[in-house]
Length: 183
Image (cartoon, rainbow, N blue to C red):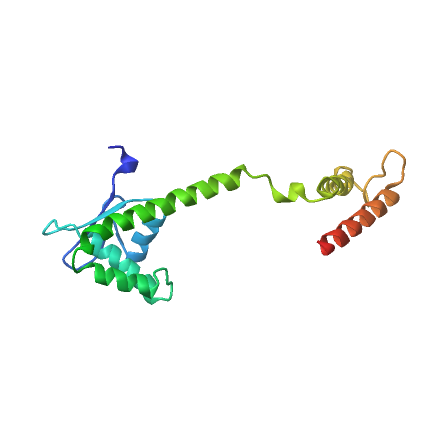
């Protein structure tokens, strides 16, 4: 098993403090939740008995988030979970939940992949190329005077008419703004 695939081992001392064996420091439940959100698997064991306490602490993390108003689990789902601890449903629920979360993860990954394949919506907007050209011309004019000492403004273009070009850019920007407002 590769180093990245090993669960992060957290030991619980008799004082109930949680100790990260990788960094040799104490951690909180919120630290453990962050490790998990960052994609890390964790394993929490009792130092003295060696019992695996991972499930107990993960449930505690969920309960704390739910009690703070970060409601992810609707009441009817929680009710169904309580019901599943009795009877024949207990054997089916874990597999169902695991399959559901796997489908959710796959769907999320697929959605992200599809979003990365999509073109930037701004590039399909009418006038986007003109706006880009205007921004480049504006920056060129702004930066032109920075390279010469004692210059009091942008350097004139080849025709010596920088005011006309700036006015044209202002007009085009105003036109684009009005088009955007209509959209």
